[in-house]
Image (cartoon, rainbow, N blue to C red; front, side, top):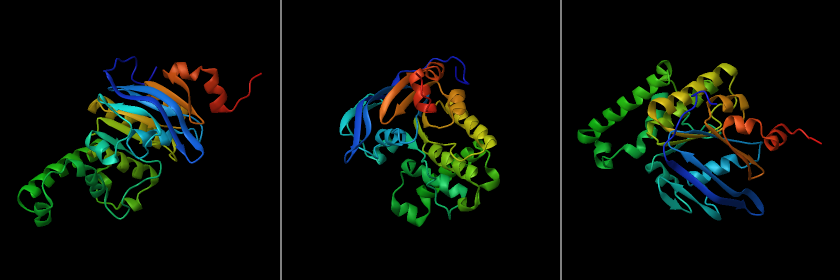
Length: 265
């Protein structure tokens, strides 16, 4: 059972059907299928090289699979461009932090509002009239995210000066600024100490609970996965090994063997 307790979910919002992806002769994903329901926290786990990041890249259009389809909000497609994914409510964080190091926390999170800005470049260049009003509205939205993530004290600090755990939180803030319906988190807790992991776990659950955001995350820490996930998909060498509740996955012998590298007679 996840930290949420037993919960019911909405309709299937994302369906991955028979997706295969190769780079040259290397198969990153082989015939992967799974579903994500509205409001769910789904974890994708597996050893290094299992294809987890490749799967996220297929979902938001960075990679285009040679086989299979993605159905998002009822629309089936073979491939999608990342900017289309963003407009359709898909936001993403990255394994390696992809922030503007010289810019402040506030300005970094503001960049997440780009898809929401409608006034043309003429007004934005003049920095007056309708664009000024729009910018103030976006800034207010971003300030609310800063409050939500409890990073008011670093709002004007260049992110390059921040410790790793806080940079990860800023990156989450930037993704939230896009008001995503589907949030893809690529190892949001990698490199963190225990206290930082606990904080990030709480924010992930709060995003899911308070905003109703559907979340797909990659995570190596099995304790975190079992605490915050409603559903778990296990990949190993590009193939799906298991797909079920945290308890089902935890007791699956194939998962135990692959994940812990334990040989059984």
